[in-house]
Length: 187
Image (cartoon, rainbow, N blue to C red; front, side, top):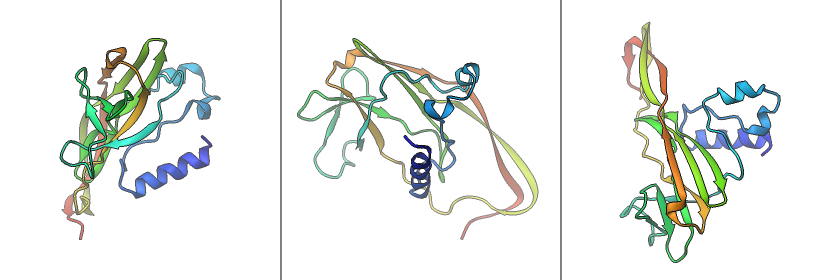
């Protein structure tokens, strides 16, 4: 994906209220000039093979507009089966640490396809918030809480849910948040 298109898409997501504090992850083609050890130590799961496409959004039962399109598999609640077909989908969690104003830390996903299925790595950092207090007045908060975004469904194809291995990693991540001695609520 061209770099300009990716940045335009990121801007559109931020404007639409998606994870506004999440940092974009550089794609492999954008990181070709980086040394291999810098890419390996970045904390992003390795991408090999094809990343499955996003084909739909998943709404929890009772919240979906219209008839249900996906049902949860018996193997894992993160795997869903399209109604009326054998297509298996993976519910991609967009945010690792939500706040009332939106996503503070994005979840990261890595996909590896093999002959017999998929291996999916989900990185959900354990977030430690450190407050940085400055003297003075500031506006703190966002006004109205953001509703949660529906999960994206990535198509894994017509495979058995037992052929999908999901590994969750929980590295520690420290996030500094600024506040002030005299915070005001937004209008």
